[in-house]
Image: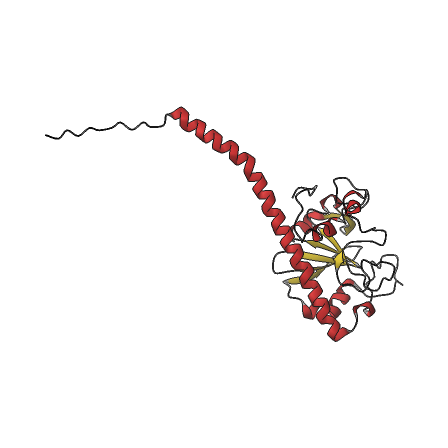
Length: 241
């Protein structure tokens, strides 16, 4: 007669299971935040690249119908206390030069002293056009949270500049300015003023506009820093998303 022997299988004890779960929890706590940051960086970089490409394609197409961009009407920055300023509003400028060449969800005029004109895109991003400056928000929901309001109900002229380089990024359009080689005869470009020396060191360390934790104005140079990295957020980027 054949005798069948049964082997006893050793099971995990409760203590072993709890230890395993604790280890998994620690690993998750260490890795998940990094994965979330990496994902957010990828989304921001992708949307920045898309906006840069899309709006400049629109400008190129518009030039066919409206002539050299250097001769386009200049947008005035604000009419508050300056009613005689020459130029046209951001709304008028957009409707004249870009509306036919862009696909958007909606546009809106804002009740701001800077007369920002907002353009919302199908991918959930938006750009606020104000004079030569354009503030691009990869997530349009961040726009309202970024605005400050005065007691009289008129949105304040400023914005939460501590969010610059994180929730919004600064571009500008000054193709007619012969004093700025970074913008002359170019389309929409990352913000670089005429004082910019072209160095990565200035992009990172300028105390006024540099892509660093503490600045006296806003981190306008972050946009160019990202562009130089192929529209990918650099590994040593000083800000968290």
